[in-house]
Image 1 (cartoon, rainbow, N blue to C red):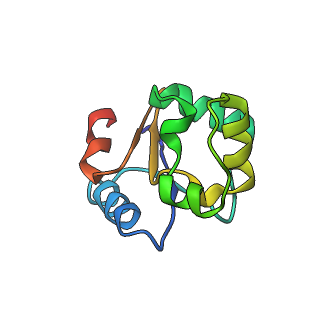
Image 2 (tube, rainbow, N blue to C red):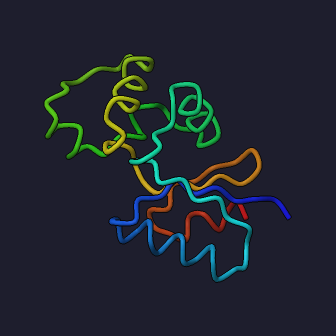
Length: 113
């Protein structure tokens, strides 16, 4: 069985719902609490590629603005901001094989299982 990885924030209701959805399917799950163990830049690049998103689409707008980080379209600068402030990342992110989805809504992850 292939392991499913979830980048999880236990304080987030969507993250908890997505984790429960995975657990209900009796999958082998690796849980990464990304606020305690933030992904590095290389991992973020891989996640962004697997998600098929631009780095800006991985940001939670309110949190990004609240930190006063300003606007930028530079992909590498956005990745470095996420590394420095993992709380601004969209969550949860579920990875299965070479594909990934953001669990907002939680049912989005079913596409890759």
